[in-house]
Amino acid sequence: MKNDVQSDHQSVDAPDTIQEAMKRDTAALFSDNARGAYAQALLDLMDEGKPIVVVEADLMKSAGTAPVFERYPDRVVQVGIAEQNAVGVAAGLADMGLIPFVDSFAVLLSRRSADQVWMAVAFSDMNVKLTGLYSGFTTGTNGPTHQSLEDVAIMRSFPNMVIIEPADCSELRQAVRVAAEYAGPVYIRNVRGDLPAICDDEEPPFEIGKAVMLRPGNDAAIIASGIMVQYALESRDLLLDEDIEVRVVNPRTIKPLDEDMVLLCAKETGAIVTVEDHSIVGGLGGAVAELLSETRPTPLKRIGVKDRFGDAGTFDWLIQAYEMDVPCIANAVKEVIGRRAEYAKD
Amino acid sequence: MGIALEQVRELERICLETRKWIVKMIAASGTGHAGGSLSCVEILVTLYFRQLRIDPVNPAMPERDRMLLSKGHAGPALYAVLALRGYFPTDELFTLDKPGTRLSKHVDRVKLPAADISAGMLGQGLSMGVGMALGARMRNNPARVYAVLSDGEQQCGQTWEAAMCGAKYKLDNLTAIVDRNQLQVDGFTEDVMSIEPLAAKWRNFGWHVLEINGHDVGQLLRAYDLAQAWNGQPTISIAETVKGYGISFTAGKVQWHNQVFTQDQARLALAELGESV
Image (cartoon, rainbow over all chains, first blue to last red; front, top):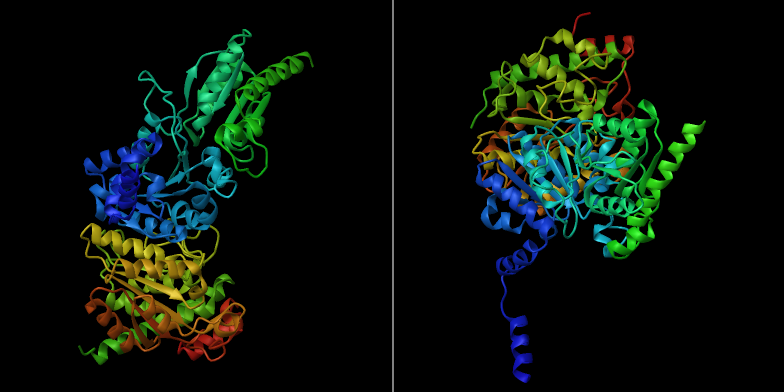
């Protein structure tokens, strides 16, 4: 016992270079699948010769891009805790024909660097990719300051900005490739932690502006993005027990929104629920509401954070406390189906 | 390295022409920032007519040197210089801020590809310059990057984020020039928010610092040469200038930050600049 304590003590005191620490962290991070998938996607593209540069603002560990730094140290630009500069530097790199991916917390890219993203990237039409990490409640225990509940709303209000929200790691890997191949600004919304496998091989390849129908059904449609897709699928299962068959759609890109798919859902089901790990103001729900109210008014319920700040807690606790969990989604479906019936009587 | 007197005289002549166009554009459109446009004329003329490796016929040439007007409100000065350099006819200058123009007073690179960046929100240009200089190095592109900053921008935090980054990466292909005209919207920089000692600040941030007279064409040219010869550090030239320089009633006057020439004032200004009306 005494020896064990001593050896622990020694290992703590043992000289540890940053490189060694990074290698250790890398192994740990690869077990966290969203980060691992992101790094792997970048590495694949770089191995193929794509001129990708990763711009880090002291969040390489959060982004999971340490393996990129290990293999391509000269292609990682580390600017420190300076997100405004990170975005400007990325714009300059893009001007020189490189494809920069800026990694930072979604809150920082959208809130702190809003003006830089607007002027140096969107307005300037620079080929910059922004990866917003720890989106929504996925960083629950870091509390409200770190929970990005407005990033999609901010980014969506900028012209010339593509917004991708992958629902699983397969989509994330495809999204990174699609973003790299697309010439122009892209915002990728990434989670903290693990994303369960949702897509199967039969699904159409990832395309900007193309939604995918994950489950059929004509009683109502749930349009859910990112990490919330899995909860939408569970709600569908729950509702099947009550003989309600709900269609589940994953928009994949929130901007441009696949308007044809949303309107088809409206036409064929007449009752829609949106689900997002984000404020109901200005995000997916906002986008769907804007489209439907102007084009085909349809009973709609937006599941998401109802114009409130976040709170510290685990993801599971938060989505329950903020009425975004599976029973809430199922209830919302019943509510819109009820409204559809009411409107039909009028 | 000596600089031929003839070359200096020719550049000074172009500066005079540029100033006349700035007055004419702003008078014609009724908008524009005269003071900060007039203060950076020598800086822009020496860059575009001597220093930059550029080709007005092929403005998108990947190996071209980059010129980033971070103080985007000096658009009229940039446009006058670009037109005189042959990027577009001088007649287009009269479209400043008119409906459908490519020349809005704050520069838009998408509309006007001859401009290397869009600007107008201050404090962002040097970050883009750092990215371009880094990118040029990564791609073995011989382009040099020049960023023209205002002195007011020295109050922006992002300027110093970029300063740290440029020094960290030893970007000796990057040269910044500060148009140190002492004035900003609300008064003297030293009253609004002191930025001095500016040279010492940049030295402490790891930059090679030159202090020059920003209206002296010869000094500007020598500073560019020194910067180009310098290794291992980015260079910044703090160019002492006068806001509204070249016209007696605008020089050093804070209200000329964005005051517009009336037709009478324009005639007076042009007469002072030697234009026979």
